[in-house]
Image 1 (spheres, each protein chain N blue to C red):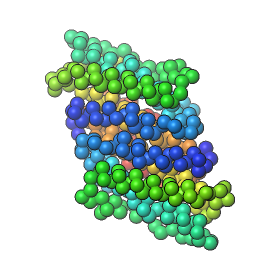
Image 2: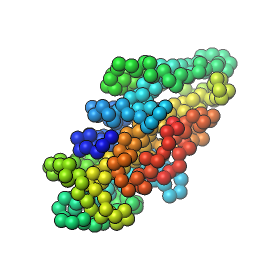
Image 3: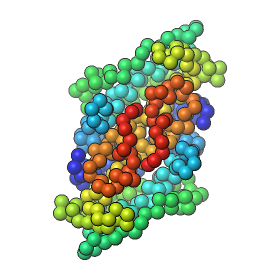
Image 4: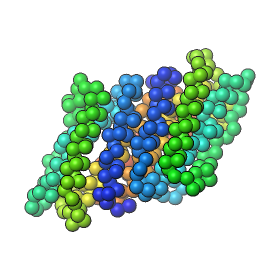
Length: 178
Length: 178
């Protein structure tokens, strides 16, 4: 599938609703447990998505669209959520993410992007030159990857409970590398 | 985490809502594409979950609870959805799944299961003896695994669009084995 804003936006728009459907009013242990050392709980993942809304996707999009020639992105902090989410509830994080995402998509739509814009570029601190289409596609895949990660992390809490079914419930054998 | 009905039910109850949040009113190509040969589209997965509601989880639960000594389960048909979902829309499948799941959970709750019941057993056609707690835990993990599969399958439609981000969007590299 080629990147198109009209098919990308319906995914980006629904992620707050998907996260709410997955996590709201769940018993706390589903939300706070992770997959083992150096892995993230569903709670951590929501905080990470919030940080992306604040510092990554639309900031970089604006930079590409507003700066003349190949602006360089700030590096993204993949661990900011551990400090920023402290003392909060998952419900407050879900609300915060929903508000930020809504504002970012309002901003994205207001840009009236054309296929010429999709080809405009910026400099990623590690990858070098990337296009706006790649950035926006990565935003979509990043959402879906973290939804899969949350589901997998919750599934693994029952790793020792399913007995022989572990053979077919292969989600239990995926290693955390998202 | 140990299996307990009070923590398992909140997951089983929300799966229809999660699937609706993920799939309803999406452009058709997100829903009908799969991960390659012999893999399932999100549409196929919803059909598979419907077949599980009709022939697997609660049928086997009832068999364990009602038959005296170690009843044998019917094998589950993992491919029934290809015939059963023909000509249907994803919206009609989401409705059907929601109704079946609701009825099954009403039935499950009405059984007033005790921890003695959790240890009761049936015979799985491949695995041999399994407990009711293992069956019900597998039901939960099965839901979460298929939510992850749907997210992964959609993510992969942008595999060629994300450019160098493929390095960190590791969901794109998971092989379909659920």
